[in-house]
Length: 305
Ligand SMILES: NC(=O)c1ccc[n+]([C@@H]2O[C@H](COP(=O)([O-])OP(=O)(O)OC[C@H]3O[C@@H](n4cnc5c(N)ncnc54)[C@H](O)[C@@H]3O)[C@@H](O)[C@H]2O)c1
Image (cartoon, rainbow, N blue to C red):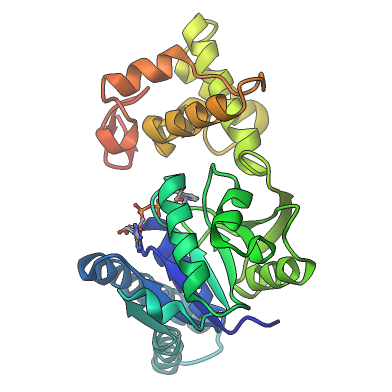
């Protein structure tokens, strides 16, 4: 694989996780943020996560009789320190110039993302591969903006990145074969199970999941079943860990609305993209789900009340 040094733009919820799994995978990583305070916060989250993982790894080694408590602790701490040492923070885009792969994980705004890739296209060495972690925008448009569409892929990680095994690796009709192969290999090296997907709305997971959540909200709207019964039905009937209404509260009603509205505008003839009136009403009322304390259910922190 040609990738050794990786840049990650944005060290927020997703970006800090991507920085961490890449460093755990043995890559040198530059974590780039817009401002020092956001960088400090992202790196702080990584430090906490690495400390927690080290604690768990030491406990496991002792339980399995592989080492004494003291040795296990020392080894886990040394591994975490080695991972952390591969990460460099920066607020200067010029530090991305010699990266072999740059992954974008900034705000979900296509114009802002395109402007970033246009800048990176001028700044980075010609062989740099570009990737976006976008959940809802076409990868091809960002590739065109970068001026090197053949070196553009999607690398769609899932939240929390450190725990979720999946990464969707998205290729556009212009993505070069070797670039795509390197992106798949990178996903694997980060400890993930990469799946290949074309540049289609929602890729695999969200293309199936979001219309399913919309269908559940439309059921609720029509009064076919209560929120509790829809969720119970899908948990016990399909073995899902969470029902679709609770899941919408979990994801955020505003985030769900943003994705569906974007798709209905961009693909007006696709019947599976529809905006439920109930979803719009709740967002207008600032009932955004778990994060605002109320959506379809009431929440206290992470717990439903
Ligand atoms: N949140 C999720 O569950 C999830 C899941 C998969 C994919 N995504 C996608 O990942 C991306 C990031 O989402 P998030 O939830 O991590 O957002 P976030 O708001 O937590 O993080 C974004 C970070 O990017 C930084 N940033 C913004 N513009 C920048 C710039 N020009 N240069 C450097 N840093 C910049 C911000 O300071 C912020 O820290 C979005 O495209 C989103 O759609 C999110």
